Image (cartoon, rainbow, N blue to C red):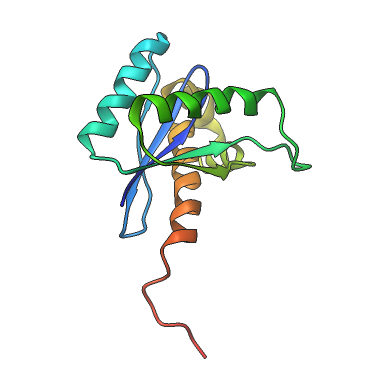
Length: 143
């Protein structure tokens, strides 16, 4: 299993990589202004890393409902499935961007927003959540 975690956005797409080892690692975000270029680069990342599964953050509201952003992600997921033919797993992304941004010193946050660093850290949190659900811990449980 080789997974690509995706934090979808209309301006930036955060990416993270993980496999059967069970550790998610952030990758450079797709930050090109042209969405066509972002899509091509996404395809390159999928092919180069021989990805078998896509893990996409799904934007639930805090009350569990979905809004307009979820419709955007639904369309993105449909295109992923059509173009790449890989399994797509949806993971609740509630507060992942907030957690990712909180991991950066306040004085540095403004400068990193456009870099995609926060987006890729959010993708990493999304993917790690998925991996934690799928891969049992390597150490024996304590009795």
